[in-house]
Image 1 (tube, helix red, strand yellow):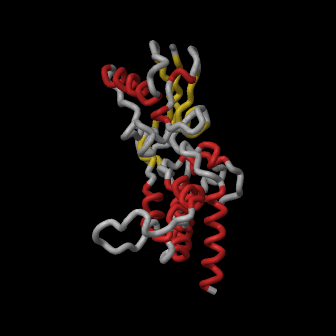
Image 2 (tube, rainbow, N blue to C red):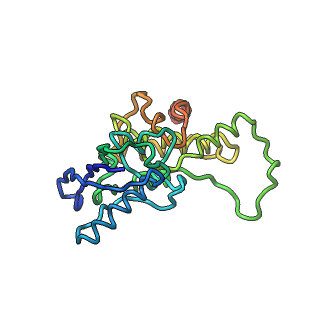
Image 3 (cartoon, helix red, strand yellow):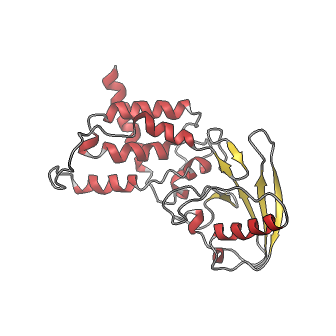
Length: 248
């Protein structure tokens, strides 16, 4: 395939940035999207140009590093798929593809397509943990957990923290991410001691990082590569309301 790539290039956080077009020939439909960018970068290096900076690590849809907005959609056109698992067969010969970084004030651009997502780390540090005694692991069945709670907790725990929810939200809200981290701990017996302090601290940190407010548009869950359900936000709001009442 022959493609035209319009890629956001930005030298550093102070650079205004711009879209730069690149022509790429002989793209195999079996390439992943990141492999296609690797081919472009190899050509740029040979030509003495600066390669396009983009985040990647596992390339198996696990780590959440591959943060690209492709034709206006975080992670691209294939639903429930990370950028690294998106293949070029989902595009057509002659396509013009626009590639941008996550757009959010809380995710400042470092270079080109790389953004600083350490705000997520600070939200986790504010309360995304449980207090548990050290020592040998307890017997798996020693603490009964209702099946429905176990399934809901597992669904929330699949969040990989990629930030697609923030990039898709018109308010750049981090509610889906924060709710997923709060929900998967709050539904487990081990997470009960810190349950209400956790939601208060994590939501406060989310607000302090400059993320926008949630207005229930649902764009977040539509682009989430792990399909985190929208109900997790309802659980966060319920816990936050209970925490507020307990504190008053």
